Length: 530
Image (cartoon, rainbow, N blue to C red; front, top):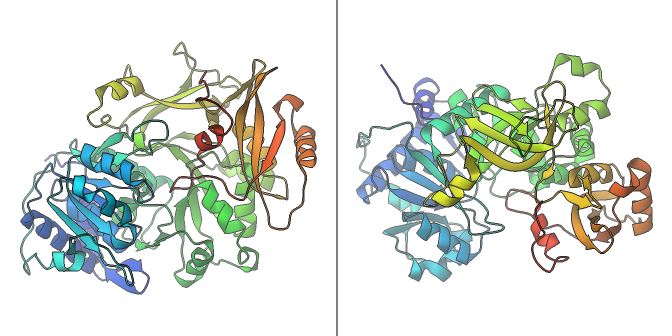
Protein backbone atom coordinates (compact mmCIF):
# COMPACT_ATOMS: atom_id res chain seq x y z
CA UNK A 1 0.00 0.00 0.00
CA UNK A 2 3.04 2.29 0.05
CA UNK A 3 2.89 5.25 -2.33
CA UNK A 4 6.02 7.36 -2.84
CA UNK A 5 5.82 11.04 -2.00
CA UNK A 6 6.20 12.95 -5.26
CA UNK A 7 4.68 16.27 -6.34
CA UNK A 8 4.15 14.77 -9.79
CA UNK A 9 1.08 12.97 -8.46
CA UNK A 10 -0.62 16.33 -8.01
CA UNK A 11 -0.73 16.83 -11.77
CA UNK A 12 -2.59 13.52 -12.11
CA UNK A 13 -5.08 14.68 -9.48
CA UNK A 14 -5.58 18.10 -11.06
CA UNK A 15 -6.23 16.59 -14.51
CA UNK A 16 -8.68 14.12 -12.96
CA UNK A 17 -10.77 16.60 -10.99
CA UNK A 18 -10.30 19.94 -12.77
CA UNK A 19 -9.95 19.06 -16.47
CA UNK A 20 -11.74 22.19 -17.74
CA UNK A 21 -10.30 24.59 -15.16
CA UNK A 22 -7.80 27.11 -16.53
CA UNK A 23 -4.44 25.80 -15.36
CA UNK A 24 -2.02 28.19 -17.07
CA UNK A 25 -2.26 31.72 -18.44
CA UNK A 26 0.76 32.88 -20.44
CA UNK A 27 0.14 36.25 -22.10
CA UNK A 28 -2.44 35.52 -24.83
CA UNK A 29 -2.34 31.73 -24.34
CA UNK A 30 -4.40 29.65 -21.92
CA UNK A 31 -4.40 25.93 -21.15
CA UNK A 32 -6.88 23.93 -19.12
CA UNK A 33 -5.58 21.24 -16.81
CA UNK A 34 -6.55 18.64 -19.41
CA UNK A 35 -4.56 20.50 -22.09
CA UNK A 36 -1.65 21.10 -19.71
CA UNK A 37 -1.60 17.40 -18.86
CA UNK A 38 -1.61 16.43 -22.53
CA UNK A 39 1.28 18.80 -23.32
CA UNK A 40 3.43 17.55 -20.43
CA UNK A 41 2.73 13.94 -21.39
CA UNK A 42 3.70 14.70 -24.98
CA UNK A 43 6.94 16.22 -23.76
CA UNK A 44 7.67 13.10 -21.73
CA UNK A 45 7.05 10.81 -24.69
CA UNK A 46 9.16 13.00 -27.01
CA UNK A 47 12.01 13.03 -24.49
CA UNK A 48 11.78 9.26 -24.15
CA UNK A 49 11.90 8.87 -27.94
CA UNK A 50 15.02 11.09 -27.90
CA UNK A 51 16.71 8.69 -25.48
CA UNK A 52 16.02 10.29 -22.08
CA UNK A 53 15.49 7.64 -19.42
CA UNK A 54 15.14 7.37 -15.68
CA UNK A 55 18.17 8.89 -13.95
CA UNK A 56 19.21 11.08 -16.90
CA UNK A 57 19.67 14.84 -16.43
CA UNK A 58 18.03 17.47 -18.63
CA UNK A 59 19.07 21.13 -18.35
CA UNK A 60 16.46 23.82 -18.90
CA UNK A 61 17.09 27.54 -19.42
CA UNK A 62 13.72 29.25 -19.75
CA UNK A 63 12.00 32.28 -18.24
CA UNK A 64 8.65 31.95 -16.42
CA UNK A 65 6.63 30.69 -19.37
CA UNK A 66 4.33 27.72 -19.82
CA UNK A 67 7.26 25.90 -21.43
CA UNK A 68 9.19 26.09 -18.17
CA UNK A 69 6.21 24.86 -16.17
CA UNK A 70 5.69 21.97 -18.61
CA UNK A 71 9.36 21.01 -18.32
CA UNK A 72 9.13 20.43 -14.57
CA UNK A 73 6.44 17.81 -15.10
CA UNK A 74 7.41 16.43 -18.52
CA UNK A 75 11.02 15.73 -17.56
CA UNK A 76 10.52 14.55 -14.02
CA UNK A 77 7.63 12.13 -14.59
CA UNK A 78 10.08 10.14 -16.74
CA UNK A 79 12.17 9.62 -13.60
CA UNK A 80 14.74 11.98 -15.13
CA UNK A 81 16.22 14.91 -13.22
CA UNK A 82 15.61 18.51 -14.26
CA UNK A 83 18.51 20.97 -14.01
CA UNK A 84 16.99 24.50 -13.95
CA UNK A 85 19.51 27.09 -15.20
CA UNK A 86 19.75 30.73 -14.22
CA UNK A 87 19.62 32.52 -17.58
CA UNK A 88 21.49 35.52 -16.15
CA UNK A 89 24.70 33.59 -15.54
CA UNK A 90 27.81 34.08 -17.64
CA UNK A 91 28.66 31.70 -20.47
CA UNK A 92 31.53 30.26 -18.41
CA UNK A 93 29.28 29.54 -15.41
CA UNK A 94 26.68 27.95 -17.67
CA UNK A 95 29.35 25.79 -19.31
CA UNK A 96 30.55 24.63 -15.90
CA UNK A 97 27.02 23.80 -14.69
CA UNK A 98 25.90 21.99 -17.84
CA UNK A 99 29.05 19.86 -17.89
CA UNK A 100 29.20 19.32 -14.12
CA UNK A 101 25.53 18.30 -13.97
CA UNK A 102 26.02 15.60 -16.64
CA UNK A 103 23.07 17.00 -18.60
CA UNK A 104 22.34 14.99 -21.76
CA UNK A 105 19.95 17.51 -23.28
CA UNK A 106 19.21 21.25 -23.10
CA UNK A 107 15.91 23.10 -23.54
CA UNK A 108 16.60 26.82 -24.05
CA UNK A 109 14.62 29.96 -24.82
CA UNK A 110 15.99 31.74 -27.89
CA UNK A 111 16.06 35.09 -26.06
CA UNK A 112 18.73 33.67 -23.74
CA UNK A 113 20.59 31.54 -26.25
CA UNK A 114 23.51 33.98 -26.69
CA UNK A 115 25.72 32.52 -23.93
CA UNK A 116 24.91 28.99 -25.12
CA UNK A 117 26.04 29.89 -28.65
CA UNK A 118 29.44 30.84 -27.18
CA UNK A 119 29.96 27.50 -25.45
CA UNK A 120 27.95 24.96 -27.45
CA UNK A 121 31.04 23.56 -29.21
CA UNK A 122 32.49 22.54 -25.83
CA UNK A 123 29.32 20.82 -24.59
CA UNK A 124 28.55 17.12 -24.95
CA UNK A 125 24.79 17.34 -25.43
CA UNK A 126 22.76 14.73 -27.29
CA UNK A 127 20.24 17.32 -28.38
CA UNK A 128 19.16 20.96 -27.98
CA UNK A 129 15.50 21.99 -28.01
CA UNK A 130 14.78 25.68 -28.58
CA UNK A 131 11.71 27.72 -27.68
CA UNK A 132 11.09 30.18 -30.51
CA UNK A 133 10.70 33.87 -29.72
CA UNK A 134 9.21 36.24 -32.29
CA UNK A 135 11.89 38.51 -33.72
CA UNK A 136 14.72 36.62 -32.04
CA UNK A 137 17.45 34.98 -34.10
CA UNK A 138 19.78 32.24 -32.94
CA UNK A 139 22.56 30.21 -34.52
CA UNK A 140 21.89 27.24 -32.26
CA UNK A 141 21.21 24.08 -34.20
CA UNK A 142 18.31 22.61 -32.33
CA UNK A 143 14.78 21.39 -32.83
CA UNK A 144 11.89 23.76 -32.12
CA UNK A 145 9.98 22.89 -28.92
CA UNK A 146 6.59 22.61 -30.63
CA UNK A 147 8.06 20.50 -33.40
CA UNK A 148 9.75 18.35 -30.74
CA UNK A 149 6.36 17.65 -29.15
CA UNK A 150 5.15 16.31 -32.48
CA UNK A 151 7.70 13.50 -32.11
CA UNK A 152 5.20 12.02 -29.68
CA UNK A 153 2.60 9.98 -31.60
CA UNK A 154 -1.03 10.74 -30.77
CA UNK A 155 -2.37 8.82 -27.78
CA UNK A 156 0.95 7.08 -27.08
CA UNK A 157 1.06 6.11 -23.43
CA UNK A 158 3.72 7.39 -21.08
CA UNK A 159 6.51 4.90 -20.42
CA UNK A 160 5.92 3.19 -17.11
CA UNK A 161 8.45 4.47 -14.58
CA UNK A 162 8.71 3.44 -10.95
CA UNK A 163 9.48 6.53 -8.86
CA UNK A 164 11.49 6.28 -5.65
CA UNK A 165 10.70 9.25 -3.40
CA UNK A 166 14.37 9.50 -2.46
CA UNK A 167 15.63 9.80 -6.03
CA UNK A 168 16.59 13.18 -7.49
CA UNK A 169 13.78 15.32 -8.85
CA UNK A 170 15.81 18.46 -9.51
CA UNK A 171 19.47 19.48 -9.41
CA UNK A 172 19.51 23.18 -8.50
CA UNK A 173 22.74 25.14 -8.71
CA UNK A 174 23.65 27.89 -6.27
CA UNK A 175 24.75 31.25 -7.62
CA UNK A 176 28.44 30.59 -6.98
CA UNK A 177 29.18 34.05 -5.60
CA UNK A 178 32.40 33.05 -3.85
CA UNK A 179 33.31 29.79 -5.62
CA UNK A 180 32.09 27.52 -8.39
CA UNK A 181 28.31 26.94 -8.36
CA UNK A 182 27.27 23.95 -6.25
CA UNK A 183 24.66 21.44 -7.41
CA UNK A 184 22.00 21.01 -4.73
CA UNK A 185 20.40 17.55 -4.91
CA UNK A 186 16.67 17.78 -4.13
CA UNK A 187 14.51 14.66 -4.09
CA UNK A 188 10.87 13.90 -4.88
CA UNK A 189 10.25 13.66 -1.13
CA UNK A 190 11.86 16.98 -0.19
CA UNK A 191 10.06 18.80 -3.01
CA UNK A 192 6.74 17.22 -2.00
CA UNK A 193 7.03 18.21 1.65
CA UNK A 194 8.28 21.71 0.85
CA UNK A 195 5.33 22.22 -1.53
CA UNK A 196 3.00 20.93 1.20
CA UNK A 197 4.41 23.65 3.45
CA UNK A 198 3.86 26.18 0.64
CA UNK A 199 0.22 25.10 0.32
CA UNK A 200 -0.58 25.02 4.01
CA UNK A 201 1.25 28.08 5.29
CA UNK A 202 0.51 30.36 2.32
CA UNK A 203 -3.12 29.24 2.38
CA UNK A 204 -3.21 28.00 -1.21
CA UNK A 205 -6.71 27.05 -2.37
CA UNK A 206 -8.56 26.01 -5.52
CA UNK A 207 -9.62 29.56 -6.41
CA UNK A 208 -6.14 31.07 -6.13
CA UNK A 209 -4.64 32.83 -9.15
CA UNK A 210 -0.89 32.70 -8.66
CA UNK A 211 1.49 35.10 -10.42
CA UNK A 212 4.95 33.63 -11.06
CA UNK A 213 6.98 36.74 -10.20
CA UNK A 214 9.65 34.53 -8.65
CA UNK A 215 11.94 32.80 -11.19
CA UNK A 216 10.90 29.17 -11.48
CA UNK A 217 14.57 28.22 -11.78
CA UNK A 218 15.14 29.47 -8.23
CA UNK A 219 14.51 26.53 -5.87
CA UNK A 220 11.70 25.45 -8.21
CA UNK A 221 9.82 28.68 -7.66
CA UNK A 222 10.04 27.99 -3.90
CA UNK A 223 7.66 25.07 -4.56
CA UNK A 224 5.01 27.12 -6.34
CA UNK A 225 5.37 25.08 -9.53
CA UNK A 226 3.96 22.11 -7.60
CA UNK A 227 1.72 23.65 -4.91
CA UNK A 228 -0.60 25.60 -7.23
CA UNK A 229 -1.21 22.50 -9.33
CA UNK A 230 -1.94 20.48 -6.19
CA UNK A 231 -4.81 22.81 -5.28
CA UNK A 232 -6.04 23.13 -8.85
CA UNK A 233 -5.26 26.85 -8.84
CA UNK A 234 -4.29 28.92 -11.87
CA UNK A 235 -0.66 29.64 -12.81
CA UNK A 236 -0.11 33.06 -14.40
CA UNK A 237 3.25 33.19 -16.17
CA UNK A 238 5.48 36.27 -16.25
CA UNK A 239 8.33 36.42 -18.72
CA UNK A 240 10.16 39.20 -16.90
CA UNK A 241 9.68 41.32 -13.78
CA UNK A 242 8.14 44.59 -14.88
CA UNK A 243 6.46 46.33 -11.92
CA UNK A 244 4.00 48.28 -14.07
CA UNK A 245 2.96 45.11 -15.92
CA UNK A 246 2.65 43.20 -12.63
CA UNK A 247 0.30 45.85 -11.26
CA UNK A 248 -1.77 45.61 -14.44
CA UNK A 249 -1.94 41.82 -14.06
CA UNK A 250 -3.19 42.20 -10.48
CA UNK A 251 -6.35 43.73 -11.92
CA UNK A 252 -6.57 41.96 -15.28
CA UNK A 253 -6.15 38.40 -13.93
CA UNK A 254 -7.41 38.99 -10.36
CA UNK A 255 -4.15 37.81 -8.82
CA UNK A 256 -4.53 36.48 -5.27
CA UNK A 257 -1.03 35.18 -4.49
CA UNK A 258 2.58 35.82 -5.48
CA UNK A 259 6.13 35.47 -4.14
CA UNK A 260 9.20 37.64 -4.44
CA UNK A 261 12.33 39.05 -2.87
CA UNK A 262 12.19 42.38 -0.98
CA UNK A 263 13.62 44.13 -4.02
CA UNK A 264 10.52 43.14 -6.01
CA UNK A 265 8.32 44.61 -3.27
CA UNK A 266 10.39 47.77 -3.46
CA UNK A 267 9.88 47.96 -7.22
CA UNK A 268 6.12 47.56 -6.83
CA UNK A 269 5.56 50.14 -4.08
CA UNK A 270 7.70 52.70 -5.92
CA UNK A 271 6.01 52.30 -9.29
CA UNK A 272 4.04 55.45 -10.22
CA UNK A 273 0.84 53.38 -10.58
CA UNK A 274 1.02 51.99 -7.05
CA UNK A 275 -0.62 54.87 -5.18
CA UNK A 276 -3.41 55.14 -7.72
CA UNK A 277 -4.52 51.52 -7.49
CA UNK A 278 -7.21 49.85 -5.44
CA UNK A 279 -6.44 46.16 -5.78
CA UNK A 280 -9.68 44.37 -4.95
CA UNK A 281 -8.20 40.89 -4.48
CA UNK A 282 -5.80 42.02 -1.70
CA UNK A 283 -3.14 39.50 -2.79
CA UNK A 284 -1.07 37.53 -0.33
CA UNK A 285 2.63 37.92 -1.01
CA UNK A 286 5.35 35.72 0.42
CA UNK A 287 8.77 37.31 0.64
CA UNK A 288 12.24 35.92 1.31
CA UNK A 289 15.70 35.91 -0.21
CA UNK A 290 16.98 38.68 2.06
CA UNK A 291 15.66 39.94 5.40
CA UNK A 292 12.94 42.50 4.49
CA UNK A 293 12.90 45.78 6.36
CA UNK A 294 9.81 46.37 8.50
CA UNK A 295 9.35 49.75 6.80
CA UNK A 296 9.19 48.04 3.40
CA UNK A 297 6.59 45.53 4.61
CA UNK A 298 4.55 48.40 6.01
CA UNK A 299 4.65 50.24 2.65
CA UNK A 300 3.51 47.11 0.78
CA UNK A 301 0.55 46.68 3.08
CA UNK A 302 -0.44 50.36 3.19
CA UNK A 303 0.16 51.37 -0.44
CA UNK A 304 -0.87 48.19 -2.26
CA UNK A 305 -2.96 46.40 0.35
CA UNK A 306 -0.80 43.29 0.11
CA UNK A 307 -0.99 40.76 2.91
CA UNK A 308 2.72 40.12 3.47
CA UNK A 309 3.93 36.69 4.61
CA UNK A 310 7.59 36.34 5.53
CA UNK A 311 9.21 32.97 4.83
CA UNK A 312 12.82 31.85 5.08
CA UNK A 313 14.95 29.14 3.60
CA UNK A 314 17.76 28.22 1.25
CA UNK A 315 18.10 26.25 -1.96
CA UNK A 316 19.71 23.54 0.19
CA UNK A 317 16.45 23.19 2.16
CA UNK A 318 14.05 23.00 -0.79
CA UNK A 319 13.77 25.97 0.39
CA UNK A 320 11.33 26.69 3.29
CA UNK A 321 12.35 26.11 6.92
CA UNK A 322 10.73 29.07 8.75
CA UNK A 323 7.68 31.27 8.31
CA UNK A 324 6.32 34.19 10.28
CA UNK A 325 3.13 32.76 11.74
CA UNK A 326 0.44 35.40 12.20
CA UNK A 327 -1.53 35.26 15.46
CA UNK A 328 -4.85 36.93 16.19
CA UNK A 329 -3.29 38.72 19.14
CA UNK A 330 -1.11 40.68 16.69
CA UNK A 331 -4.17 42.29 15.06
CA UNK A 332 -4.53 44.90 17.82
CA UNK A 333 -0.98 46.16 17.38
CA UNK A 334 -0.14 49.29 15.37
CA UNK A 335 0.79 49.02 11.70
CA UNK A 336 4.46 49.65 12.56
CA UNK A 337 4.44 46.98 15.28
CA UNK A 338 2.78 44.48 12.92
CA UNK A 339 5.39 45.18 10.25
CA UNK A 340 8.18 44.69 12.79
CA UNK A 341 6.77 41.26 13.67
CA UNK A 342 6.39 40.34 9.98
CA UNK A 343 10.05 41.19 9.43
CA UNK A 344 10.99 38.20 11.61
CA UNK A 345 11.75 34.90 9.91
CA UNK A 346 9.49 33.10 12.41
CA UNK A 347 9.01 29.48 13.41
CA UNK A 348 9.27 26.00 11.91
CA UNK A 349 6.76 25.02 9.26
CA UNK A 350 4.55 21.97 9.77
CA UNK A 351 6.34 19.53 7.48
CA UNK A 352 9.99 20.59 7.28
CA UNK A 353 11.62 19.27 10.46
CA UNK A 354 13.57 21.01 13.22
CA UNK A 355 15.26 24.41 13.10
CA UNK A 356 17.08 26.25 15.89
CA UNK A 357 19.77 28.84 16.63
CA UNK A 358 22.98 27.68 18.30
CA UNK A 359 26.22 29.02 19.75
CA UNK A 360 29.57 27.84 18.38
CA UNK A 361 29.66 25.15 21.09
CA UNK A 362 26.42 23.64 19.75
CA UNK A 363 24.20 24.79 22.61
CA UNK A 364 20.97 26.53 21.67
CA UNK A 365 20.84 30.27 22.35
CA UNK A 366 18.57 31.58 25.08
CA UNK A 367 15.13 32.68 23.87
CA UNK A 368 15.69 36.29 24.88
CA UNK A 369 16.02 38.07 21.52
CA UNK A 370 19.63 38.98 22.37
CA UNK A 371 21.99 36.00 22.15
CA UNK A 372 23.39 35.67 18.63
CA UNK A 373 23.95 32.29 17.02
CA UNK A 374 23.78 30.37 13.74
CA UNK A 375 20.58 28.92 12.29
CA UNK A 376 20.82 25.16 11.76
CA UNK A 377 18.19 22.71 10.56
CA UNK A 378 17.51 19.03 9.95
CA UNK A 379 14.61 16.99 8.63
CA UNK A 380 12.48 16.35 5.59
CA UNK A 381 13.51 19.16 3.27
CA UNK A 382 17.30 19.22 3.62
CA UNK A 383 19.21 18.35 0.43
CA UNK A 384 20.80 14.99 -0.17
CA UNK A 385 24.07 16.86 -0.58
CA UNK A 386 26.06 18.74 -3.20
CA UNK A 387 26.37 16.85 -6.48
CA UNK A 388 29.81 15.25 -6.88
CA UNK A 389 31.18 17.30 -3.99
CA UNK A 390 31.43 15.26 -0.76
CA UNK A 391 33.84 17.76 0.86
CA UNK A 392 31.47 20.73 0.61
CA UNK A 393 28.60 18.47 1.67
CA UNK A 394 30.50 17.45 4.80
CA UNK A 395 31.31 21.10 5.55
CA UNK A 396 27.63 22.09 5.32
CA UNK A 397 26.03 19.08 7.06
CA UNK A 398 27.61 18.29 10.42
CA UNK A 399 26.30 15.69 12.85
CA UNK A 400 23.05 15.51 10.90
CA UNK A 401 22.42 19.28 10.91
CA UNK A 402 22.64 21.64 7.95
CA UNK A 403 24.44 24.87 8.86
CA UNK A 404 22.96 27.89 7.10
CA UNK A 405 25.62 30.50 7.85
CA UNK A 406 22.87 32.94 8.90
CA UNK A 407 23.22 34.63 12.28
CA UNK A 408 20.04 35.13 14.30
CA UNK A 409 18.38 35.58 17.68
CA UNK A 410 15.39 33.75 19.13
CA UNK A 411 12.63 35.66 20.90
CA UNK A 412 10.73 34.38 23.97
CA UNK A 413 7.86 33.18 21.73
CA UNK A 414 10.29 31.08 19.66
CA UNK A 415 10.30 33.43 16.67
CA UNK A 416 13.71 33.55 15.00
CA UNK A 417 15.02 36.77 13.49
CA UNK A 418 18.10 36.98 11.29
CA UNK A 419 20.59 39.62 12.28
CA UNK A 420 22.97 38.99 9.39
CA UNK A 421 24.83 36.53 7.27
CA UNK A 422 28.07 35.51 8.97
CA UNK A 423 29.99 37.13 6.12
CA UNK A 424 27.89 40.33 6.32
CA UNK A 425 28.15 40.92 10.06
CA UNK A 426 30.15 44.08 10.83
CA UNK A 427 32.54 43.80 13.78
CA UNK A 428 33.64 47.29 14.71
CA UNK A 429 35.91 47.76 17.69
CA UNK A 430 34.79 44.41 19.06
CA UNK A 431 31.08 45.31 18.77
CA UNK A 432 28.75 43.34 16.49
CA UNK A 433 26.71 45.49 14.12
CA UNK A 434 23.91 43.93 12.08
CA UNK A 435 23.89 45.28 8.53
CA UNK A 436 20.19 44.40 8.25
CA UNK A 437 19.39 46.45 11.37
CA UNK A 438 21.06 49.51 9.86
CA UNK A 439 19.29 48.89 6.55
CA UNK A 440 15.98 48.67 8.39
CA UNK A 441 16.52 52.14 9.86
CA UNK A 442 17.52 53.61 6.50
CA UNK A 443 14.44 52.20 4.77
CA UNK A 444 12.35 54.41 7.04
CA UNK A 445 13.97 57.51 5.58
CA UNK A 446 11.57 59.06 3.03
CA UNK A 447 14.33 59.71 0.46
CA UNK A 448 15.80 56.18 0.49
CA UNK A 449 14.52 53.79 -2.17
CA UNK A 450 17.12 50.99 -1.80
CA UNK A 451 20.05 50.43 0.50
CA UNK A 452 22.85 47.98 1.23
CA UNK A 453 25.10 48.26 4.27
CA UNK A 454 28.53 46.65 4.24
CA UNK A 455 31.69 46.63 6.33
CA UNK A 456 34.66 48.63 5.06
CA UNK A 457 38.20 48.66 6.48
CA UNK A 458 39.04 51.20 9.17
CA UNK A 459 42.48 51.76 10.80
CA UNK A 460 41.05 52.52 14.24
CA UNK A 461 38.05 50.18 14.52
CA UNK A 462 39.08 47.39 12.15
CA UNK A 463 35.93 47.87 10.10
CA UNK A 464 32.96 50.25 10.11
CA UNK A 465 29.57 50.32 8.39
CA UNK A 466 29.15 52.05 5.05
CA UNK A 467 25.72 52.55 3.41
CA UNK A 468 25.31 52.36 -0.36
CA UNK A 469 22.01 54.06 -1.20
CA UNK A 470 19.70 54.45 -4.19
CA UNK A 471 17.61 57.59 -3.65
CA UNK A 472 14.10 58.24 -4.89
CA UNK A 473 13.99 60.39 -8.03
CA UNK A 474 14.49 64.09 -7.28
CA UNK A 475 15.64 63.45 -3.69
CA UNK A 476 18.46 65.78 -2.62
CA UNK A 477 19.45 64.54 0.81
CA UNK A 478 23.15 64.82 1.70
CA UNK A 479 25.59 62.34 3.23
CA UNK A 480 25.74 64.36 6.45
CA UNK A 481 21.96 64.44 6.73
CA UNK A 482 21.66 60.67 6.30
CA UNK A 483 24.34 59.96 8.92
CA UNK A 484 22.69 62.40 11.32
CA UNK A 485 19.33 60.69 10.74
CA UNK A 486 20.81 57.28 11.55
CA UNK A 487 22.42 58.56 14.74
CA UNK A 488 19.05 59.88 15.87
CA UNK A 489 17.48 56.45 15.36
CA UNK A 490 20.14 54.08 16.75
CA UNK A 491 23.31 53.82 18.81
CA UNK A 492 26.00 56.05 17.30
CA UNK A 493 28.52 53.20 16.88
CA UNK A 494 26.01 51.38 14.64
CA UNK A 495 25.40 54.35 12.34
CA UNK A 496 27.19 54.38 8.97
CA UNK A 497 30.44 56.29 8.96
CA UNK A 498 30.08 57.03 5.24
CA UNK A 499 27.32 57.15 2.64
CA UNK A 500 27.66 56.37 -1.04
CA UNK A 501 24.88 57.31 -3.47
CA UNK A 502 24.49 55.08 -6.54
CA UNK A 503 22.00 54.62 -9.36
CA UNK A 504 21.48 50.89 -8.74
CA UNK A 505 22.60 47.98 -6.57
CA UNK A 506 23.96 44.66 -7.89
CA UNK A 507 21.44 41.84 -7.57
CA UNK A 508 20.98 38.21 -8.50
CA UNK A 509 18.26 37.09 -10.90
CA UNK A 510 15.98 36.55 -7.91
CA UNK A 511 16.50 40.04 -6.53
CA UNK A 512 18.99 39.27 -3.76
CA UNK A 513 21.58 41.93 -3.08
CA UNK A 514 25.09 40.87 -4.06
CA UNK A 515 26.97 42.49 -1.20
CA UNK A 516 30.16 40.63 -2.08
CA UNK A 517 30.38 42.77 -5.23
CA UNK A 518 30.08 45.94 -3.15
CA UNK A 519 32.69 44.69 -0.66
CA UNK A 520 35.14 43.93 -3.47
CA UNK A 521 35.30 47.66 -4.16
CA UNK A 522 36.56 48.41 -0.64
CA UNK A 523 38.66 45.37 0.34
CA UNK A 524 41.93 44.33 -1.26
CA UNK A 525 40.99 40.71 -0.64
CA UNK A 526 37.91 38.93 0.69
CA UNK A 527 36.54 40.23 3.98
CA UNK A 528 37.55 37.95 6.81
CA UNK A 529 34.57 35.96 8.09
CA UNK A 530 34.56 35.82 11.88
